[in-house]
Length: 295
Ligand SMILES: Nc1nc2c(ncn2[C@@H]2O[C@H](COP(=O)(O)OP(=O)(O)O)[C@@H](O)[C@H]2O)c(=O)[nH]1
Ligand SMILES: [Mg+2]
Image (cartoon, rainbow, N blue to C red; front, side):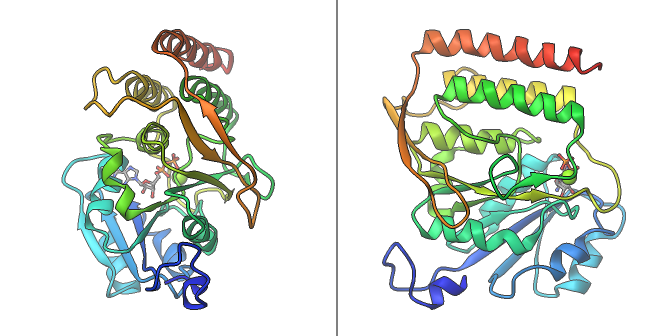
């Protein structure tokens, strides 16, 4: 449990301190996982390593570093499938997801947990707000990310500073309302988009992204970028995905600076027609961004 819960500073007024689970998707991360596990705050209650059939001994390394880590073997391939399996297996009140490649520092986990304890259902990391940053992002990814962020904000009627970043925390009791179905790297976008549609309270917290410590990224900018566009469009329109309740007129989204949420603002969501036009614009914008970046 997070120290603030021990102090009785739990903003929700809950009587029991809340427990924290950390879900780590891994695909051949034996060289990086020890760094991540060593830097895990000691108040984390449960660590779940969701392995994608690694062939480099990742599971053995996890067991050696943390004998009591829960090892979940992914049934279908993909980071999204792994994250969903981790969420399903986690038992903590608050569930944090973090990459295993050393690009995200577990020391930051306290920020995410604190945001949930202050009332957010979803706390999402942002490299683009004060106190955050990236030493990892390539020019191509930066352009693609900006295009997707712009599109997501247009489609969802939000003002997020970040979209495609996998350091997040959720209140476990709110996960079922998201009806997540993604198998791939579009999972992060799906979590955010569905949280907006489910009118959950969303907080952004600053995060610094380091270079992957060893090995290569599993992400393909074009393939996964297009999956993200499709996910945004599907979640927004309900076409091609399990339907959600129609979104209400307004969603509450909270931005924030380190140590606070900042102002809360209600944002009107747009009509389906505007969303469809925005969707086409997003796809075109993303394609143009990729072309101009020279792929
Ligand atoms: N279980 C599982 N984990 C995956 C899979 N693909 C990627 N990951 C993990 O997801 C995290 C992010 O993947 P990474 O390749 O670093 O993508 P990037 O950060 O977007 O470049 C890392 O911890 C990977 O090991 C997969 O198919 N299955
Ligand atoms: Mg990475």
